[in-house]
Length: 493
Ligand code: ZN
Image (cartoon, rainbow, N blue to C red; front, side, top):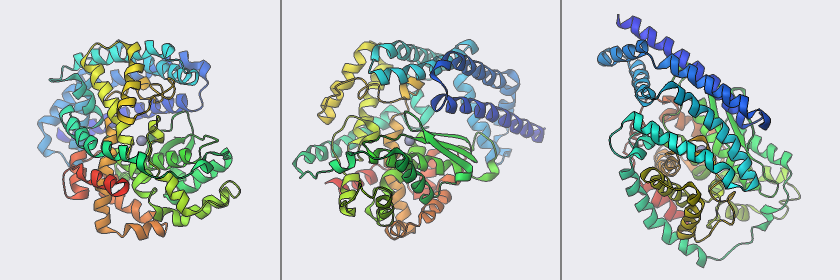
């Protein structure tokens, strides 16, 4: 009987993972090359696809299968047990939502993404506001169906970083504020270096060449992945053997595409390194957004903003941009990539001010899910908080509330995982340095050594272990924000 049920679970896993694969493909298409004109049909398809997923998953047969497996938990091997555990959690999350509302929401998100893209381009918050309002309203309703105890925002946080609550985050951000805010204030007293050379015209094809070169150096497997451009860089894993990333090229900003590409490559490596034996499964993906962000931020900041990394790679950059970077030396380059100053755009922010961008979104999301908030007030609240924490105020919506795609996609509760990811990254770096001579490895451009360490300690598990377990396995300790704070103080004090 047990064996039969395990087989059934594996069959279900394959089916649901396949449907998610198709949904991901649709999303990839919508966010890269799909024509804007096709948004209505595309959202219809997204709605139908999510209905197919819902009906394949939420039914009595699956319910009794999961119940049976949970009763026999102790007789299951680790992989089956974890698959059943994750499906049970997902089942409970959506089972009480009526199927029409579930698929309606998928349609809404698809349309909302398209509306956001246009609104951002035209600096027009009012055209996007109705979508945002509907998304928030729907999510609140869904939280009601789920019926979790405690604050509804905690249930959203749990979706992206299991085990992390508002209580945990409040303490985490309080600690960060305490050390970061004085460091940011201190920046004003530091001598300024002229970095305008990095904002001249940089040919887009050449930027593309740089991106591809860096992906190779970082050991991205081109045969099991692909890179293109989109409005907002992101990573999407169809499977561990087909991991897609995007970047964005700005003609007058060389650093932006370089570090976006490195960031997404960090995400992609995590997916590409998951244990091959897991196949197409719900455990064959990163375990949480926090752990995922720790990998992208580790590559983007801890590894490639380290001057050692550029000893070998800066000459290559100069070779590609011979005229543009004529007269620029390694020292100036390192200053440019580690330059901290308050700015408006999160994805362009330096390591020091970055957590404040996240804090602002976290405070707004708490507010949104605690009270009935007037959507039209949000841009002002956003701008006020930038003034409070960073001393600057967005002049328009595009560089303010419309800059990020997340809310348009319904991803509330997601942002805090970026700050947690940065903090996890510092702790992982600390652990890695106990095993390998990281500075020498970076200077030798031997990024395979880094990739192997990460595969062994983090990547290979996929979702087999919880974020808390991974932290313990990789570092021997539980999560502690002190590593991140020490890292920032070392670098910016
Ligand atoms: Zn990321």
